[in-house]
Length: 367
Ligand SMILES: Nc1nc2c(ncn2[C@@H]2O[C@H](COP(=O)(O)OP(=O)(O)OP(=O)(O)O)[C@@H](O)[C@H]2O)c(=O)[nH]1
Ligand SMILES: [Mg+2]
Image (cartoon, rainbow, N blue to C red; front, side, top):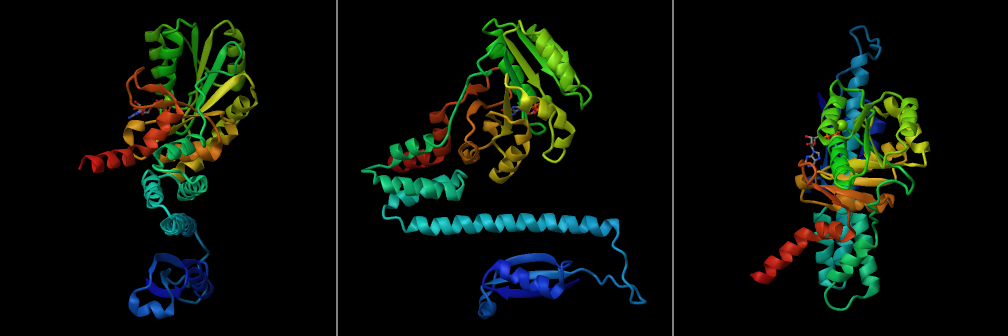
């Protein structure tokens, strides 16, 4: 494999030089700050690899095969990931640099604790600007908590105000839809003695509906496994006398949502169905945003975050709630049914985001 380095004052320019000289088949192997001895050629170095020659012995070109396309798309995916990582690092370091210029040292401290909690650096920067403009006297903790709380919403009401309350849970594979649905059935159906109906639309995996059927049998609530939006619509009509109808849907990877487009169109179009998008709090922020955008075809009105027990950085919950403006409805903190479910609360989310810095400040005060 032939390697060649290109130098420029930013990575994009170096990549462009490489593309012009090597053509679109060149692969990015590495991008980094140029070593001191090469710094005079540019601040950044990108190392490119030219794939083996695609010419046959007689000089004619191979037609690109399936493998070439697969390799190319894997390379592009890898390159996109690298660029995303670089963009995130650049945005973090430029926001850090401007935070250092802040007049109050405690604001710079606030900034680093937000970034440490994985709050989006641009959002953290905006929050700091607000605090600076407000010219807070004394400790900034309370003003910070109020500023964070003002940027998110919570709504713990199930249903959209009519009778029966109809709730659907959608979301990626394994995010905790079914578990959360059972927790809701116990807490807002069984415990309150509300006649409840569970409907499973998960006919994709063998035994997926059976798991829920067994839960429903244990709880003594009605259960139906259905396949089509038409059947779902009819079942909702037939169970209008129930107080609570909970609809479970199959998990989808963000790329196979097309399989659920009929169900998505149905749920998006029903004004009486309260659709919650279930998301794992342990996902990276950029992945969460991608998932949320893809699931917009279901027009979810609220966000449920699960697996809070699997992470210590709660910035991604805050980022997504702030970015989308959608209220958070519930937080799931473990696998136990029904204990590990909390109605969402702004102060709780804010204190989760600030938890680490509060702990650190307490430890510093005790030392
Ligand atoms: N640690 C932890 N695990 C959870 C939580 N919620 C759900 N789980 C676990 O995550 C796994 C998947 O949960 P499910 O409820 O089956 O997820 P799902 O979204 O219905 O999955 P699919 O139907 O396959 O898309 C199970 O092992 C659950 O016990 C949570 O808050 N914390
Ligand atoms: Mg499920």
